[in-house]
Length: 311
Image (cartoon, rainbow, N blue to C red; front, top):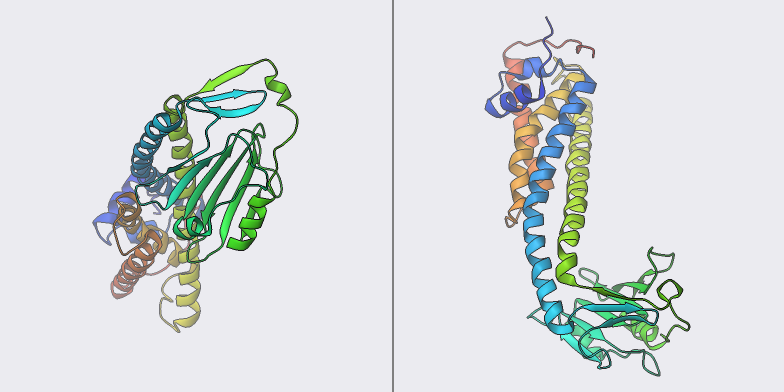
């Protein structure tokens, strides 16, 4: 009789030993993918929760820093201004290390914005704030190039061309060519709104948490499909007569369930920021080892392959 194994029993059994895998290999493709979806949500939720706690702390620290440096944000038909000294240009470090700075200009100067070359060399992040234009800069890892996001105030969606990759010299020329936008913000005519980072922090934390959950889920789920698919083809096509006791589908399902305990362990690395190893590396190594142990045990035990049950 082909007894279908539920998610809780599959998760617990795969973590406790090899005994449940002769039954797990007979689960249908739909049930196996459903179980993979559930374990991916579980792992992604765990990782995202830990990452969100750290992100919330950083967002609160940024909100306090911003309120101390600029006060709130006043938005009217002329643009977006800090409440503290809106007519005074200034630069404020984003980090104690000086790797990032925020530059505020009450208006774009004649000749555009000039950032000294020595400033660019030392920084990895920068944010340029003018009343009608905000520009976020981030240095690409291991390169001198910059990723530049230019967003005029009042624009709610990123438009084509707002994201650019530039060298140091190209960025310098781009900033020097900026000019003050003309006109006013029509939807704010006669209105003044005040924004506070301390008030927006909970919303920012929620948005970050959602993106972290989605990103981690896609990573965990798709890596499982990719690695098991590649290993099934590799072992099946390059293994000669080995693993012929299983059908291709059974061998894949064994691999999916063999990855369950490994996924739980691998999730601890991004969740707790453990050094040296990343999720993908831990999952790949642990999956191959546990998968081969299970398959070898089933072959030595004389467990024959068969067809999976249908949903």
